[in-house]
Length: 443
Image (cartoon, rainbow, N blue to C red; front, side, top):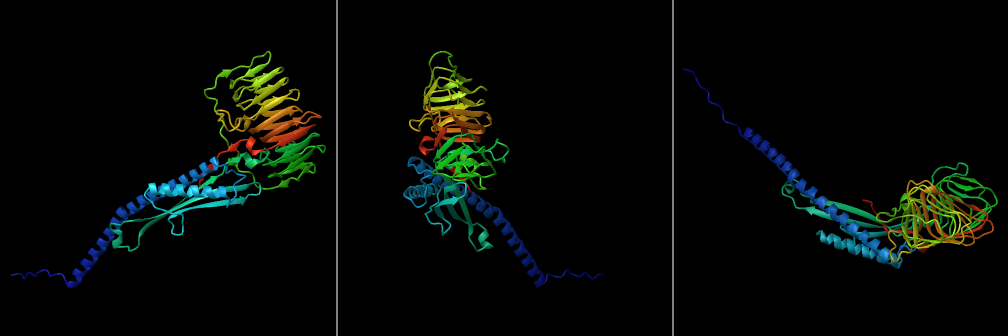
C-alpha cells in the first residue's frame, strides 16, 4: 500500500510575501488611477485657468487701448508715471480683475502670491526709436481637488499660469519721423534709401529723417536743416553729408515693421467714374482707371479716390484742389509737375469719420506697387497729410526760385528730396495718419 504524502500548508513567510505583493499592486493601481483621473482633472483645470488668465490680460489691454484712444494718450504723450498712463493702468487693472471674476477667479492687483494682475509701464531706448508700451500681466493659481492622488502624495495639486499682453499706444507711422526710407539695402549709386540732391535748401521741422538702409548726399550744392528731430540711418552712407544739419548718425537698429503697417482702404462699393476732358471739373469719390489733367481747374470732392490703371494720377497743368481726400493707387504712380498752380491737397481729418477715406492719409500706394510718386512744387503748392508708398519711390522737389510747402510725412521704399527751391517739410502728428493702439500677446 502506497503512502500518500499530503501537500504542506503555506508558511507564514509566504503569506506575508503575498500581502506585500498585493499591497504593491494596490499602490500601483492607485497610482495609475490618480494619474488617469486626477491628472486629467489637473490638466483640465490648467487649461481653464490659462484661458481665464489670457482673457483677463486681453480684456485689460483692450481697456487700456480704449482709454488711450479716447483720452489722447498717444506715443508722444506716453510717459510712465504721468496722469495719462496712470489712469490707463487703472482702467486696465480694473477690467482684468472684472474679467477674471466672470470666469470664477477672484484676483487683485498684487502678484506676490502668483494670483493677481499687474500693469507694467516700460519705455526702452532702441536707438532708432523709443519702444513704449504697457504689459498687462495676469497670474492665476488654482488647486485641484484630488480623488486618489492624496493617498500617495500629500502636497497640493496646483497649477500656476501666466498671461502677458502688451499694448502699444496710438502712434504716428514710423514713430513720427518726417522722412522715412524703408529700403534696407546698402548704398548703390543714387538708387537707395534717403537721397538729398540738387541745389535745394530743405528745412524739415518735426520728426527728423530716417533710412533703414542708405543715406546719400548727391552733390554738394544742397542744404538740409532738421529742426526738432535727428537724422539717422541703419545701413551705410555715401556722398556729401556735411551739408546736413544735424549730422547724420549711423544707428544699427531698424525701425520695426509693425510701425509702418496699415490696412489698405477698401474700394468696395465705390462707383466707377471717368474724368471729363474739357472745362473746369469737379470729381466725385469713386474708382477711376486714371486721372489725367492738363489744364483748367480740377477739384476733388472729399472722399476716397481709387485709381486702378497703370497710368495712375498725372497732373501737368491747370490747378488742383481737394480738401479731405485720400488717393489710393493699386498699380500706377503719381506725377504732379511744377506747372500746376495752385495746388492745395489735404488729407481728411479724423472727425467726422471720413471712411472709406483714411484720416491723415493723402496718398497711399498699395503694397507691391513699385511705381513712383513724383511731385514738383512751387510757391503756390500746399500738401497736407501722409504720403505712403511702402514698395514705391518718392521724389519731391521744388521749381527753381520757389518755396513749396509740404505739411506731410513722406514714407517710401526710397525717398529723394531735390530741385532748386526752398522746400519746407513740416510734420505734425495731428495732420498725419495715426496708427490705433496695437495689442500683442506675449505669453
